[in-house]
Length: 344
Image 1 (spheres, rainbow, N blue to C red):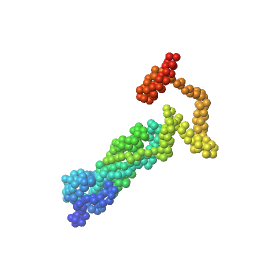
Image 2 (image 1 turned 90 degrees about the vertical axis):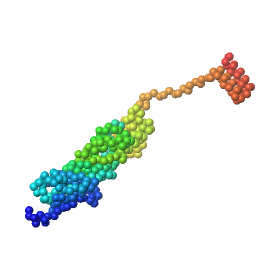
Image 3 (image 1 turned 60 degrees about the vertical axis):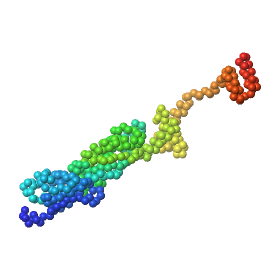
Image 4 (image 1 turned 180 degrees about the horizontal axis):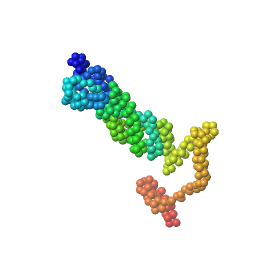
């Protein structure tokens, strides 16, 4: 290369990223036909990391600070570019900046209910919503696994992937936690901690550090919530005793009978059609059969009154006389009557 062509080249003396656009996580410094001058200044802010990439491979990583690019500060890139043979030669390499600030207030939610096994309600589907925050913890891994060689990589793009990881991790954590739904709803902080432990490991595989994770609400789909409300109502009415399912079924039948009278086809026209009508008929027949087989209860006999001993009644009379509640004449007359009963 001649001296004239060397002078005509366009050189970069300062590399920096001002993060002018919100929500950008990775940004490639615009090189075009420029080359980086030996001894150029690299500015990396406190919330950034700069990565030099040579032919698609990461060569060097720089943390916060002001760096002068020489063979001493670019040891790996120096070896790749053979600067030991031409020390003063400029070089061209892709430089990527990564924002390491914590991305706060990110919302998450289950687009579809998660099916879990519940010891109280058997198989149920639950929905959950909350917020989380994260940051780029390992720029090397993040570049290799997620952002790649794109000019700009945004928060919205990475969160599309994080949500998939979050849902998979949450389904695994909830399914293996063996915590009843009612306990989940009452202890959302404990549930969040259970999910967070697995989620932190899943994020780390992509160079992302999970900062905070919380669960704001846990709920059932509307149709299951209605069924739960009915079950709670049945329990409050005394229908859920030792035989819980029997009590709940009878409660549903009792609620269905008035509806059957308003539908064409009688009981068979309720909700599920003929199958529902047959089920209701079986429960009613069983209940009537049990009632006919049981003997009628005997009428209650009131207990015979117990007469108070004469001595006790005399003591009470004496107490009334001492308190001035009865006259001596009344006391003497009653005393005579009681003594007659005692003596016979």
